Length: 289
Ligand SMILES: [Zn+2]
Ligand SMILES: [Zn+2]
Image (cartoon, rainbow, N blue to C red; front, side, top):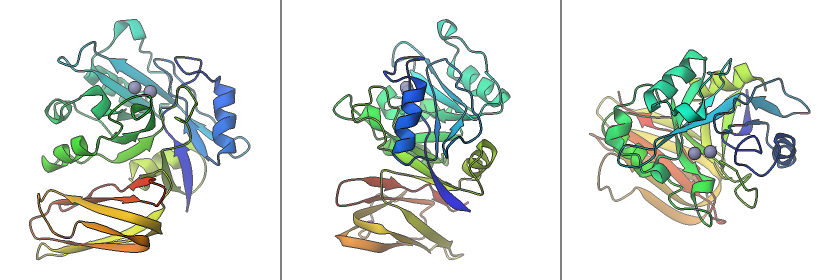
């Protein structure tokens, strides 16, 4: 098993991106990526086998909704075995998009919910999201606003809905929105089957640079310990469903180990790390079931 670096959301000249698929693949390959998904709007990007060390997994993004009151949803399908056959003009409803991605054998990712102003209540009514983008590069400055959806994810987690969390570029313009936010997936080999199996079992984390491993122990008295070893960082925050605890943040130079003592009553913990250059990393949820 080893870690593979991948970008799960990007656009090309097949929809509203400025690079051709070939140019985009060469650029990510040169930046050290192991795999990518070409997720053009309503254009099914086929997967294949790794070529020169770069694997393309199948993908597409399906956006729907015209105003925020009724809900705007952008949903990325990954690892589909065939084209789910949806067309842009028909604008299927979010639940139909999720279901058709699943019928084609894929995973349905809720893209940039903060940017789309999706509410936790409305998201919770949808069945079958497999993952949620906690960070989307293009949704941030200088192109946009609201790149970070951690608050929405935590509001869902507080209601007992825990989505695995990805970070992606959503690259369109390739002027700094590329090669920034990615996932590290721990898999047996660089094939679409192995990468998707690892993602399905939650064996990945989201990052812009910091790397980490962690161990979580939850004891029967309600307490627990989350213990993180990482590349040097300056800041860490542990997020839980408790509004106040005095020890959720740590700051220091070149920290390579941080810990959090879980308090009785806390049902979930996740953490974020930040290095000296401001690059973040995001864990998934540790949950007391
Ligand atoms: Zn989108
Ligand atoms: Zn997109």
